[in-house]
Structure formats: C-alpha cells, structure tokens
Amino acid sequence: MIDKRVKNATEAIKGIEDGTTIMLGGFGLCGIPENSIAALVESNVKNLTCISNNAGVDDFGLGLLLQKHQIKKMISSYVGENAEFERQMLSGELEVELIPQGTLAERSRAAQAGIPAFYTPAGYGTETAEGKEIKIFDGKPHILEHAFKAEFSIVKAWKGDHTGNLIFRGAARNFNFPMAGAGKITIAEVEELVEPGALDPNQIHIPGIMVQRIFQGEKYEKRIEQRTVRKKNFLDLER
Image (tube, rainbow, N blue to C red; front, side, top):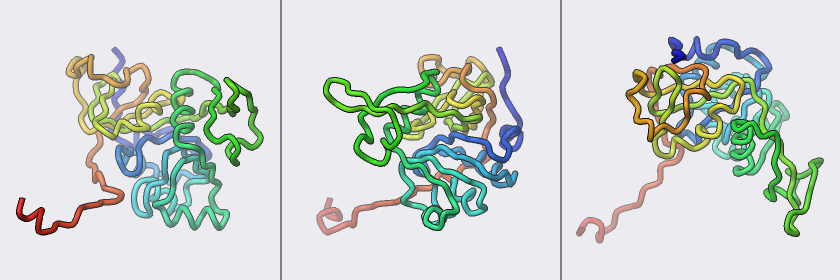
C-alpha cells in the first residue's frame, strides 16, 4: 500500500504556483480545508482560479485569500456573505463565474468520474446558457456543460488513513465528496489520521486511489456562518 502522508499543509500544497486552478470543498464555512487555505495565504501565491461553492466570509475561509488579492477568478454558485468579494467583483478586480449549484456539483462529479461533458436544463434561458450548445431532450432544452479542469483539488474529511481513504462527517460531506479525485492532484486534510485497516471499509466515502496527499490538520475553528436561534417565551419556560 502507498503511504500518502505529508507532514503538514505547507508540504501538501507544494506545486501550487501562480495561475493554478484549484477546487476547494466545503459549503459555506462547513467542511472547508482551513489548514490548506491558511497555507496558501502564507505562500503568497497569486492569480489563482478557485472553484468553490462560495467564497467564505471576509475574515475566514477563502475570504483570507481575497483580502490579499491572491484570487484572480472565482467560479462559485453563492457568494452573498462576503463583502470584500462583492467589492472586488463590482470594481472589476475579480473575475467571477456564477453557475447553478447543481451544475457546480455535477461539473465536479463529472471531472471525478472522467466524464468530459453533460447536458442539463439548469440555466437555460439565462446568462448561464450564453454561447453554449443547446439540445432538446423529451421536448425540453438542455445546455451542454463541461467537466471542470483543475490542477489541484483540496478537500477536508473527518477521518482518513495513510493510503488516502476518507470518511466525511455529516453535512461536511457536501462538495468535498464530488471534488475528491476531480483535480489532477487531490490533497486531503483530515481531523484524525489513522493506520490502514482502522477504518470500517463499509463506511469509507472516498477510496484512497482518488487521493495523492493526506495530512492531519492542527486545529479547526469550525465557524458557523449564520447562527439563528429562537427567542424563548413563557410557554418555552413552562415546559
């Protein structure tokens, strides 16, 4: 079995240079590769193209890369929680491609599976469809979407072993699952790195063949993007 462990995030991101296209797992601030993002910030790499469901918030996640103007282009489906992203987009400093969330997931999964393109009805009749091939299936128009092409894919898992097998936990599975194996090189950071054989084979979400580098993260803030709670009333207190 191949031991795919690297020492830390700094070693894991080696080879990511100016102009690299990177896919990053996570949804909002849930399940994002925090250590790898921090290492990218420290590396001062520039002109990145980042494919991610969203762009983090102003002071966390991909927002840290945006603060230092390290991202040239964002390919995302939702970016509403980041004021700096909005400023850079409106000022023309940042190139942005917004696509439907399902299309983002499927373009990632297609890259993972080695499928070059697919047809989807999502986005037909909108700016998303401009310049794209359209075909009719069962009387309904579909647009042709191509699989993502990225040099690196960075995901975050709950547990992993030395050979790269991964287990995600709860909602953190999100875009980490379809992006694992979707880049030429997949980097996995995990909360707990265990010996081969320690993981239940029936629980493994991503097989090690899809992962080239793996390391155990040092710490995770696991921020909540928006906390919503219900106000108590007398009925609640009586219960």
